[in-house]
Length: 221
Image (tube, rainbow, N blue to C red):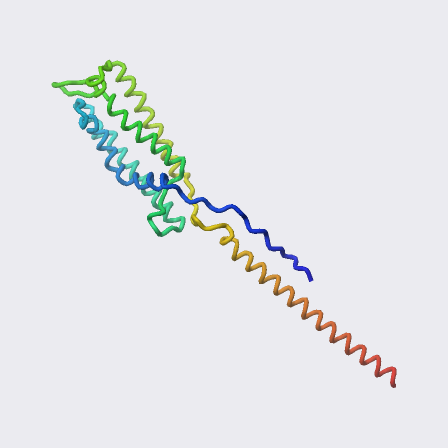
C-alpha cells in the first residue's frame, strides 16, 4: 500500500555563516565602552589640537551618556549571541547592517574631533583643522555641528538595530540536518501504518479461510 506521507525533497539552501567582518565588529563593542568617551574627551589633543572648556563639558555630559549607551549595546548583543545557542565566543557577531552602522559611527566620531572648536580662558582656541589646515573657525564650527548631528543619528540607528537584531542559532549546519528528525518521524508513522494494514489483511485472510472450511463441511453433510 502506498504511504500517505511523502518524504520532502532535501532543500539545497544552507544557513550562511557570519563573516569575519561581523565578528570583528562585535568585539569592537567591548573596548568602545571606554575608548569612545575618552576619545570625545581628549582625542583632539592627541594630535596637537587645543583643549579647554569643551572637553570638560563633554566629560560631565556626553561622555557618561555614551558610556551607558555603549555598555547597553554590548550587553544586548552578548545576550543575543548566547541565546542563539552558540557556546563558543569565536562565533559571536553582529548583523551586517549593524556592523556597517558601527563603521560609519566610528568614522564620524574620529573626524568630529578634528573640527571640534575648543579652548580655555588662556592659550590657543579653535580646532585642529583651523590650526593645522588653515580652516576658518566658522567653517570648522559648521562641520562640527553637522558631524555631531550625524553621530547622534547613527547612535540612534545602532540602538534600533541592536534591539531588533535576530541571529541564527545553527551556523554551518545544513537544513537537511535540521529536517532529519521530521523525516525520521514520517518514516516511523509510515511503518506503523503499513504494519496496521498488514495485520488487517492477515486477519481478513484467516476469517475468509475459516468461512471456506465451514462451507465445505456443510456440503459434505
